[in-house]
Image (cartoon, rainbow, N blue to C red):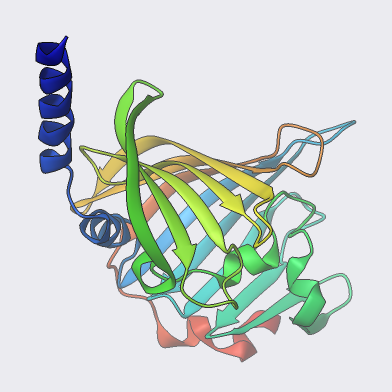
Length: 244
């Protein structure tokens, strides 16, 4: 009996010795998920009770503070534009020919009827900057071996006070995220797939956002094309560009 206990303890010690520090894992995830610049063309599928809606868009981002998105289709949404500069977000709708700033309680609202909130868009900061992390397990998920990390927010102004994240042990990209409120209630899940290598970084090209407080299949976000570290003209991130 003692022999098996010793072997069990030795096996645990071996696994623990091979486990990188949580901060090292988060730093590698951030390195894959963030770039100096990104230009992407995407399709968003919003699964509804009666019908599904599909939208296409083109987005530009520079670092973590500047993001510009223009919706290309369908006709009803074409020309809608969003601009994020630091902690401010504006949306322009061609039907009203108005630009409004999204702030306060409006940030918690659904973006274009999807399972993604405007607040989710604003929280584009590196995980290692927002959370203290610990490795709690190693699990298989979708045929991949992943580190499971528990993340606790460093400050109270972070949208999700707790996260559980499954990180691919080979590519260091998230495979799944569970997002919790301060009370511990699960609010949202994000599933990642179709990991591709672009300009030296591993990027999940398909994501499903699921607001667990709503019925339905959630929202698929599919990246059809992405350029990393390409040149973006400065005027793209100008507020005056919204009405052009």
